[in-house]
Length: 182
View 1 (cartoon, rainbow, N blue to C red):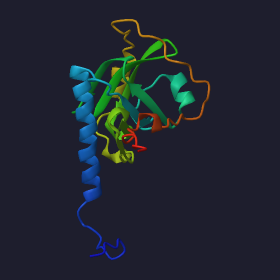
View 2: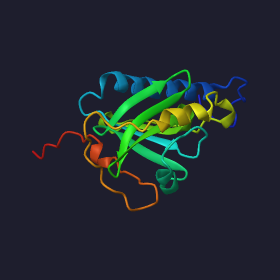
View 3: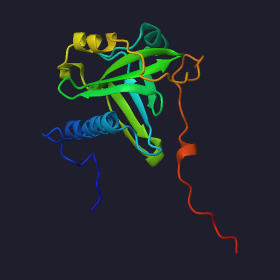
């Protein structure tokens, strides 16, 4: 049986929306696990989010550098990772150019979640603004507490380019076993 999207009837149930909500729950759960237990082994997370999404709080200099979209890496150099499910808000401390900052990221602003170690990734559409329940003042309050890390963090390399950085994940892909030439 051929599956032709043009012949498929339009659904009166919002399956696409429900699927995105369920997958955002996977992101939330993974981040809560990392907050409670740290990231095990070689796991690390690339989190891409809309910086222009209502309730997103980042330092002004980063907002100027990344006016629409930003990717952060959660591996060795982060602290105070928290996920507030009621407010659908992620907060995390990171160092940018040696300056500590606390970011507040609404879950609806997340457009990408990747764990290159296991080649797992998700892409999302930003949630519609009408879906936001937490007010921006809650996010502002969470991010205004600029907290220094418990231990000094090594300074991440400076990025001079203003364009969003694209990282090739080819280096992280597993290769098949070598072929036997005999």
